[in-house]
Image (cartoon, rainbow, N blue to C red; front, side):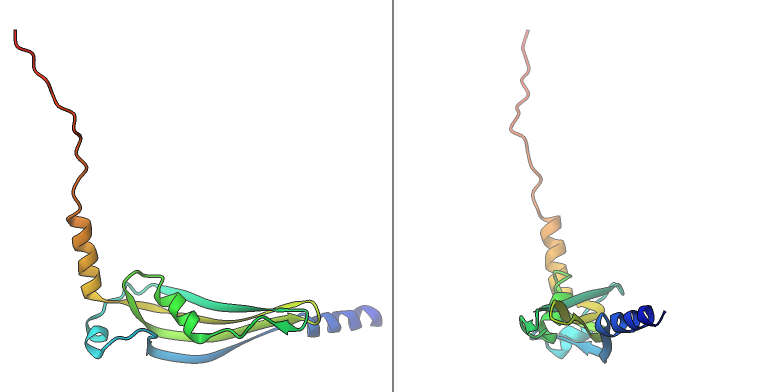
Length: 142
C-alpha cells in the first residue's frame, strides 16, 4: 500500500503542469492601428484563440513562447483583423523530467475587424464577373 501511494505522489509531482493567467486586457493589438480604426472597428463577438508553443526535449528548450506571436495568430484568424477585444492571456507549461515538455502562451479574445477592409472585401465579392459560356445558339432557317 505504501509503495503504490508513493508512486502516485511521484507521478503527480512529475507529470503536473502549470497554468496561470498573465493578463486581462480590454483592447490589445500588435498591428499599426490608429484610434479611429479602433473606434470604427466591428466584431462578431465570437472568441478566438491564438497560441505560440515551444517544446522542451530532454531538458533543452527549443525556444521561448512569444506573446506577440500568440496575439498575431489570434488576430489573423479573421482576414481584416486589426486588434483583440476583451483579451485573456495565459501561460501553460508541463514537463516530464528528462523526457519531454511544452511551454505555450495562449491569447483569447474577440477580433476587431477594420470596416474599410470589410467594405473592400464585400465590393470584391459583388463585383466579381460571372463566368460566361461561349456557347452560341444556332437557328436554322427553313
